[in-house]
Length: 410
Image (cartoon, rainbow, N blue to C red; front, side, top):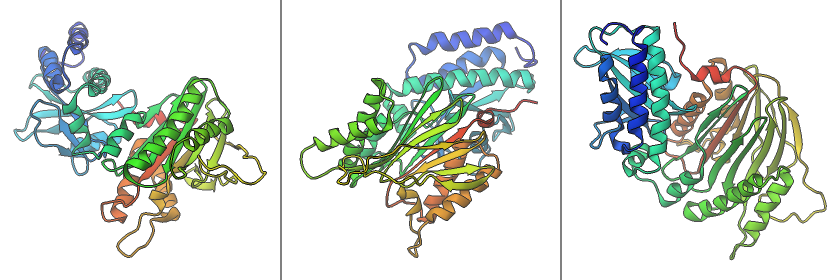
C-alpha cells in the first residue's frame, strides 16, 4: 500500500499480526529489523530507538547500533519529551515520523518511521503507527530481561554493581490509570546506592514509598534493598497498615549483623477514588503538595525514627492523613535533591525545588517530563555530577494527567 494512511485496514491487521507472531522468537537486538520487515508492505520503514535510564540519549536497536540521538536539541528528543508524533526529514530529504514508544505509560523510546513517496501522512496513519509503537513498547521491555545488548543501550555506559542491583529491584519509572499518574526518577543512574522508590497500584489503592539508606555504594544499596523488600513482601501478603509495614522493615534491619543499619523513608497509601492519603514519615524529608500550580504545604506530620531504629520514647508513631483535591500533585523526594551544591557551595534547596515544580505545572508538562527536567536542573546546579543520590516520585491525582502522556491527533 503506497497511497494513503486512511485505507488498508486488513493489511495493517496483518502488520500487527506479523509483529506479534515473530516477537516470540526474536532476540532484543533484532527488534528494528523485525518491525522494519513487517511494515514494508504498507510503504514504510521502521527503526526502534531505546531511551537510556538517564533519559539523555535515544539509541538505535541493532546488533551493531549506530550513534545515539540526544534527547535535548533534536526533533526526536522533542517527540520523546512531549509524547507527540512529530514529522521530520532525514539527511536525504525523505519524510519521517518520530512516534513515541510507551510500555503502558513508561517512556521506552521512539519509532523512527520512514514514509515512501506515495504514503499520505494523515490521522489514520498516525493512529495506526501509535498502535504499532504501543505494541513495540511492550515487546522491547519484555526482551530487555533477556538481552545484555538492550541493557547496555539502556544504561548508556557501565553501571556500578550497586546500581545494577538497585535497578533490578525497582518498578518501571511511570505508571498511569484514568485516576492517577505515578512517575519516579533516580540519579545518578549509573552510581545510585542507598536511594530507591517503590509503588504498586490496584483498583482503588496506590501504595507509594521513597527510601534513603545509610552510607554509600553497595552497603547502602543492600540495606535499602532489605527495607524495600521487607515492606513489599508484607504488603503482598495482605498487610495494609503503614505502621505494621514499617515494623517489618525495622525487624529485618535489626536482625542484620554488625553496626546499626537504618533507612529513612516515606510510606504512603492513597485511595484513588476519594483522594484520601495516609502517610508515615520515617526520618525523611516531608512530601510537598502542589495545587493549582502552587505548593500549598509540606506534609510535615511528626516523623518516627528511620526504619531500623527502635524508638526510645513512649509516643507511638502516628499515621497522618491528607485529603487531596482533583488535580493535586504530590512530590516525594530525598535530600540528595535539596542538598545538591553548586561550585560556591550553595544548596539547590527546597525553594528551587518548589519553584521548578510550580513552573512545570503551569507549563502543563507530562508528569514524567516534569521530573526529567527537574533532575536536569539539579544536575546542572551541581556541575553535572551529583555527590549524593537523588530520588523523586511524583503523583498526579484525579485529573487528566494521563491525557498529557499520549499524542494528540488532528
